[in-house]
Amino acid sequence: MTGNVYHNLSSAQLVEAAIRRGEGQLTASGALQVTTGKYTGRSPNDKFIVDSPDVHDKIAWCGNKPLSMGKFDQLYSKMQEYIQTREIFIFNGFAGADPANRICVQFINEFAWQNLFVHQLFLRPEIIEAEADLEYKVICLPGFKADPAVDGTASEAFIVLNLEKRMVLIGGTQYAGEMKKSIFTVMNYILPERNILSMHCSANVGANGDTTLFFGLSGTGKTTLSADPARQLIGDDEHGWSDTGIFNIEGGCYAKCIGLTYETEPQIWEAIRFGAVLENVVIDSATRLPNFADGSITENTRVAYPVDYIPNALIPGVAGHPQTIVFLTADAFGVLPPISKLNAEQAMYHFLSGYTSKLAGTERGITAPQATFSTCFGAPFLPLSAHKYAKLLGEKLKRYQTNVFLINTGWSGGPYGVGSRMKLSYTRAMVTAAMEGHLTDVSYQLDPIFNVYVPESCPGVPAEILMPRNTWNDKAAYDRKAQELARLFVENFSSFTSNISQEIIAAGPKG
Image 1 (cartoon, rainbow, N blue to C red):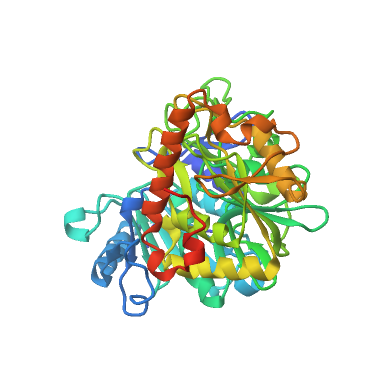
Image 2: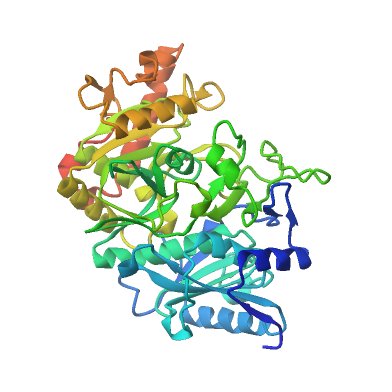
């Protein structure tokens, strides 16, 4: 290799390098602003797992695309040749705040700003580990583009995980979230084999040590709702649940910032400072002030920053077993109750279903909310069978007597385009009530269609909105739309019924 290679630079050095190389510019608050070209979100159709003998029988191929070992070796060889004369930035860090359940990962980047991204998103060791201690390697070269006809990819972009060789190859896309989610996929492969539930969720802990988990896809409110000034943040996106409790897989946060204001999310607002990376946020060329309301580049504008930029972050990100779990969904049909309590069987049903709406910008081609089911609230990142994760969840819910709530952060009073998005203040009040036990002694009604228990009252929330049918002017239209969504639940769940108990099947909606 004849190009310069930089190892484990500080965040300041990486910012300097990014500016020197013309990769980005500083905003008024000191954050580094970058754009990612045509790829402004994850590209799930371009993600592959190498089909090697060691992993073939473990991977759930119905949800994962295979690539041959020969095609992997071919791509790897081409990428090695590509980087020979280029500047390269290397960062060694950890995934997993629990020392007993972490992996050491090396990231090799051609962009300084992407190396800054992983420097801030993963755990930074005080002492850089020796090369021999590295367990996984991620090579991310956005300037290298695949030839689908030759390389076996779906497009010029590719994200290829080789779990046998413990390597990840990324090319053709500048979207930094691919690196983050690739390692999450790796942890979803490793941790369940250790009887640890790996989870796409955020987590926080109260002054009394009460831990809460927030499950949900991108845009449903995990980051917003877990960044609570009255509680310590464990992490905003990825966690493990072991026999000793919860631990953060990452060392940073990757928050959506479309429509961000100080009034609604002051902690995220103040984290956008020197060392943070703003992706695809429009800034004023003269004042360098960001315009968080501008989605002209993408609705999926993002900011990456270390978790300790949140004033009340828990360092290290390790806490006890959760007392409360919240499943977040953004229901574009506008028919799910704002909050409902789930028993163990209902929780298993909705965990496997993972219903929400894909929000604009989180994936390429998504410009308006679309109803979707994402198994375990993280289907694109699950290499193993969904039953493996669901079984672990069920066992832990029963062992630790965890309360589970389903909260709709989506629409009320009508579907998307007719109704309105649930007020954040109401959602926060529901979450607080669930965490603080205020919903323990209230009366509940069983929703006749969705088969969940809806509280008749909740502190800080108007009682009339708790039953969604009350918020629709046209009750018959509500009934039709609710039945439509219930049928979608039943159709989706049919793929699980061969390995699921009748009690769990019966706990779902009545389509």
